[in-house]
Every structure is written in structure tokens, then in C-alpha cells.
Amino acid sequence: MNDLLDCLLHTNLKLQEYDQFRTNFLARAVHDFRTPLTSLCGYCGLLVDQRLGSLNKSQTDLLLRMQHSITRLSRLADAMFELSVGRNVKREPDLQSGDVEAAINQAIHDVTPHADEKKIRIVIRVNPPLQPLVFDAAKIEQVLINLLENACKFTPKKGVIHVQGYPLFWDGRSVKRSAASAANGDGIHGALMVNAYRIDVRDSGSGIPCEHLESIFEEYTSYSGGSDRSGGGLGLAICRMIVDAHRGTMWAESGPDGTQFSVVLPQPEAKDQQLGVAKAAEILSGNALSA
Image 1 (tube, rainbow, N blue to C red):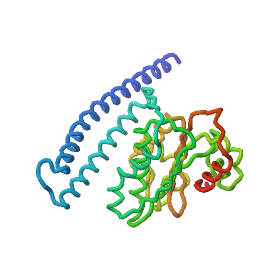
Image 2 (image 1 turned 90 degrees about the vertical axis):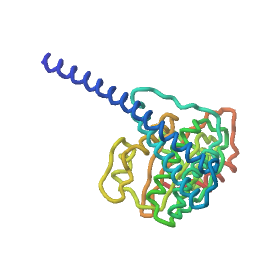
Image 3 (image 1 turned 30 degrees about the horizontal axis):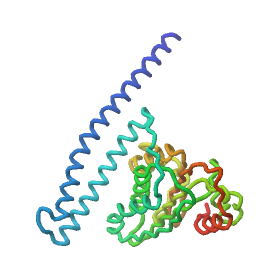
Image 4 (image 1 turned 45 degrees about the vertical axis):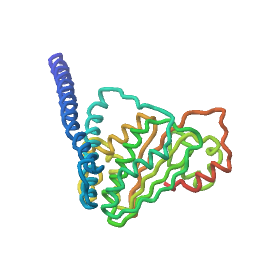
């Protein structure tokens, strides 16, 4: 029995050692990978700005596509590093009072070239939070970019992506039920204590099998089929890790008309702030999607 225990302890220590080696290797590899990508992006910028000579429209468009692809590779490298280090190092987000509308618009701007390639229309409907929202703008932009790129990938040509943002009451347990109640007009009490902000990204592409709606957020997982949205398990896994660090929640819903990814970010408590019933109920009932 003691020999077996010693063997298990030795094996566990070895696994921890190998995991640390893997983390160190990925950190070095990502650093070496990002350096030339940053240089390439800068060179493309110089050419696009025509600092080295004039370009015609076709050349400029091509360089912009190259720059966009380089940026996507840089984000992928960052995601690999975040996933590798996230388990071992507690990294708190840089929480600041910010403009969530600006973050949403910036993410849409970043993915517009990808959407334009497939003539995808992005419909935006965003209401501002009813009190200042505290979040890490760069990280939340990263989440939204990942979700929008995922939506572009699976939306057919000339399809539509809907982006909505609105305040709501979140009880920390069932945000779907809270949003649905507000949409049906029976969330008046909750409207008085709006304490979160929800962002929905809904595409018109293929759906996700119900049994995979939760597993797609796990690292390095995939499911078979031509409509596999899990990819390499990097984008969605890093999204959930960032949202969890904000003490929010994230989930996916899917049906025959497409898939929706939803993110809820908690707002800071404001005990002395009372929201008008009519104003809060109007915003919630006009924007919440029934779950």
C-alpha cells in the first residue's frame, strides 16, 4: 500500500513538472511568435498609409486583409498564452469604469473586414447601462471579437448577425429566466434593481447540438460534423475564462435559425441608486430575447 502511494505521489509530481515545462515552453513560443507578427502588422500599416509610395485601391484592400489576418493570428497567440498560464497564475482583470458601447463598436469595427468578405450584415441595437459599468475594456473587446469572428465563420454569405446590449437584473443563478421575465412584463421588481449588463451575439448560421452547448467552452475539445463550432477550443474557452474573471456568466443557445452567445457582466452595487420602473422595464422589455 505504501509503495502504491509513493508511486502515485511521484507520478503526480512528475505531471506537475511536465505541466510547468509545457507552460514555460508555450510562453516562450508565443513570445517568439508574436514578435514577427507585430513587425508584419507595422509594415502593413506603413504601406497602407502610403508612407513608402502610392498604392491603388486593390493593393490597399489586399494589405488591409493581410493586416486583419495578422491581427487574428496575434489574438490566437494571446489566447494560447492565456489558456496556458490561466490555470497556474491568478490574473485579475484591470477593472475600470468604461464605455461598453465603445467596446462593442470597436469589436464590430475589427471584424468588419471579415464580415464584408461574405457580405454579412451586422445589425446593432445597444442601450447604455443605467449606471457606470466597471470592466476590463481590452479583455471584453477580446471576448466580443472572438464571438463575432465565430459568428462570421458560421453565418452563410449575405447572412445577418445581430448584436444587442442592454441592462438587466441578474440574480446570480438563472439569468435566462430573469431576462425572459422582464421581456414578458413580470420583471418590474427586478427592474428596480438592475445590476448587470447583457450582450447577445446571434448569427444566422448552423446550430449547435444541444448536448454540446456546454462542452464547446472547454479547452481543446471538438465534436464531429461539418458544423463543429468548437474549433480548437481556444476562442470560446478564453472567452469564458475572461468572463469568469469578471464574475459574470456566459452561455450559448441554439436553434434551427442560428446560435446565440450571451455574456452577462455584473455592475457595481449602488444601494442608494433607485431606477425608475417605467424606464428600466421599457428598456428590458424592448431588448431582452426570450430564452
